[in-house]
Length: 256
Ligand SMILES: [Zn+2]
Ligand SMILES: [Zn+2]
Ligand SMILES: [Zn+2]
Image (cartoon, rainbow, N blue to C red):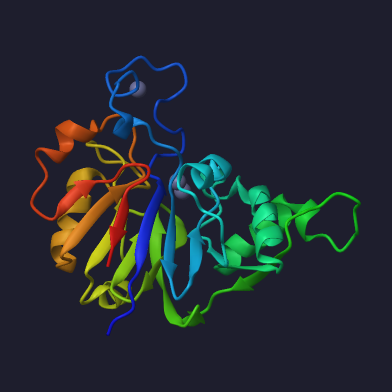
């Protein structure tokens, strides 16, 4: 029997979050709670543990809202601020786990984390409690909680970033190009969470239309779009999307 996997969408917003500070547009002032988007991150639960993807600035609030009380490991897609600035909140998970937390990313991301968060990764001992993290450079498939994690190389404008596949699920947030060798890694997917920023094309993110086209090309059964900006009204867009495709919302839980 296949092990069950549960994916919790902790956040599905673009880098500014929705509502966007100072904006009075229809989505930013909407009363629909599904139009309130914290920065993009997911939690993948399987094998008796939880794998967090990215540490969004709202990580603490996201964990409280979704009753997350365990993080065994973190996968980093890339080092943009909206994907890493909640890293300090991992402290409490060290305490709950009574162990170090293993963090995985590509070489550039790991280097950037070391640079930006010197207080976490310096060898100097401080009296304050900093996250206990062990960084790993990903250079191929690796095992985590008894399943293989397949890194998927993607382009986010000029920057190489990672998506991740575990079983028949793939998470690909910030990107606007999937190289042919990565397309091969997406065969037979059941669920894909894919970044789609807005209606209009953008230099570093897929637009909604481009996301739909990619999903069709991949032939995936079910697609949930993430990293959404304030262009996209939850109800309005979902009423128009093809079958099997939907905008995500903070707190969405999908079982596989
Ligand atoms: Zn982002
Ligand atoms: Zn707005
Ligand atoms: Zn980014």
